[in-house]
Amino acid sequence: MAIAKVSEIKVSSKDSFDDAIKTGIARANKTLKNVKSAWVKDLEVSVDENGMISEYKVLLKITFILEEL
Image 1: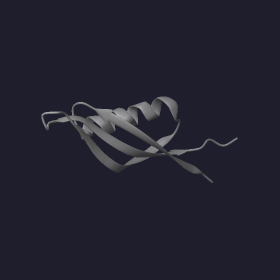
Image 2: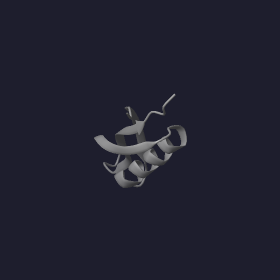
Image 3: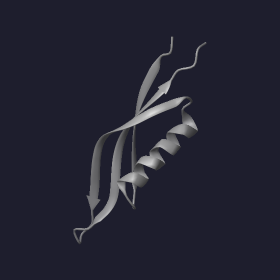
Image 4: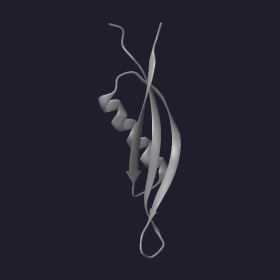
């Protein structure tokens, strides 16, 4: 029987939401084993003094399978 765990991570990108998501999943794969899925829980942007988007932020929920002992 497989047991899954969910971990939340927040990641940002200067380029796009898509880049933030890809960066977050790549980072999760460096630390977590058996990453199986991810879903976007929240989106956020930072706005500079000119009213332009300066940063895209994503809160991801990463699902991974725990290894058997």
